[in-house]
Length: 299
Image (cartoon, rainbow, N blue to C red; front, top):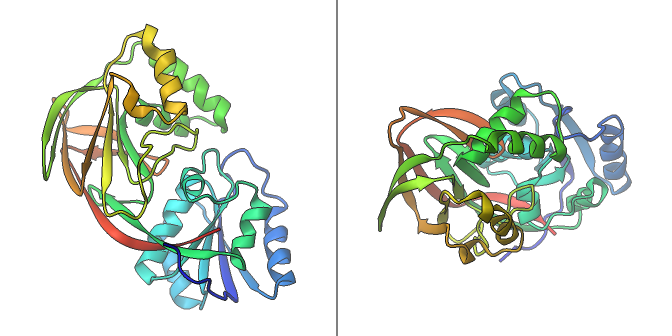
């Protein structure tokens, strides 16, 4: 359960100036002004896409902040989560991206002005984090179709949900599922999958509920598989995913575990989406959980 609120005086906001399709021109002023009105001091740190994690960690070691807010999308949230976890600081989120998946799972308001109120009106919750072949993961990672779409999306210049849907429709035609072998501490599964999600939480930023019963602080993660399905079954599949009915489909299955080894048969490397960021990793993947390792501020 969440803990007693902290009185936070000095807060750092980490801002991604190009996340999502939201104009950031007034965000800086709003964050500083609102904090000032409530007797808080706000600092600003902009990401550049160049060595951001090292720069942020060094900055935090040199300045005495009591909490760090990620003001951006899923990539910015993952960056801040990794930085504050190492230092034991609490993290807040001001959603400014295209998806904002973790903030939705935490019940954080999607309106930036309302989310800033977590500075003075919050509770603290400690959640699990994952390692996917050594890469920090706070929310969701996946292989297969969505990882391909995220990669194509990151290569383009247009942001927002419309661009994502357009790319997904283009890639769906001719997509060939891979074959996987999964070994957990309790079971082994082998077969083809359209998509394989490594889930620490429940919901993608697109509001697809891939893991309806998932909890962020239970010490477990889930491997959620969508097996190949005929085109005629696609509308029903989408209905299940948007209505929290993942396990109602004959083409889905879920493995619950604390560690996993995921091999992609016939492939030495694989595209993986990790907290909204595309990576190409060697196979097999090694996945493990760090229970209750990240402090977050929630309503």
